[in-house]
Length: 224
Ligand code: IPE
Ligand code: IPE
Ligand code: MG
Image (tube, rainbow, N blue to C red; front, side, top):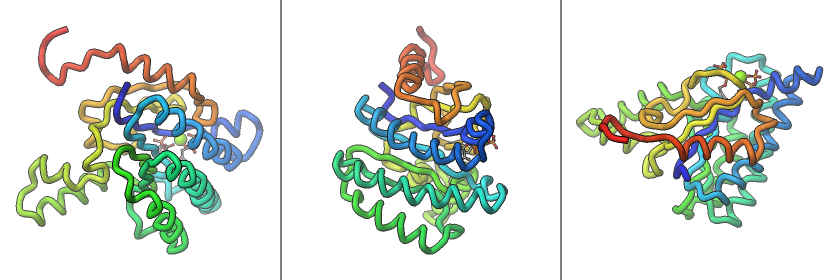
């Protein structure tokens, strides 16, 4: 079982378009899937789950779509918090906060605060997140400490202290990272599926884990 799984939850828009609906319809179903997959991942033994909800580049979408995504985020954070508290999972919203509305930041602080004491397992939701931005932020913090070393950079990544990223799943058929966890991806196994995010269910998650379990991780060494 991978200790840390990252998911690029892609394909909501196409899922809706296939049904002749607006993109926001796909986002609604996609947001409902977050809870289902998180529950399944943690009950399967995952320790950290990192979900890409909104990238730094997604601000370039139409204002109406951005608004809808932010609204849905506040709604599912509430649901996730209730479950996280029950299951003692720490909920983290990671990314830049300075471009989010003050109301949303207050909601995020309120919900994540309720789980701040838990240390065993983490559910990370990436919002206004970009891997390049995260690395730049960590490098600046490392420089301020006197040395831009890998060790110092790692200390300042948003996922510091959590298990190394084992597996990246991307739904929706694109074979790229789109600025997702670039530093942490160094030795992660990659799994791409054409299944669109709202259709990605427990069985699809299990398929990704099964594929992961068959990989030979060599980390640059030689051997089987
Ligand atoms: C969800 O999928 C990912 C988000 C940025 C919220 P998309 O909205 O990118 O859906 P597609 O890729 O256009 O189908
Ligand atoms: C990546 O999906 C971001 C999220 C899933 C939040 P995008 O749909 O934004 O990625 P591109 O534009 O296809 O690279
Ligand atoms: Mg997309």
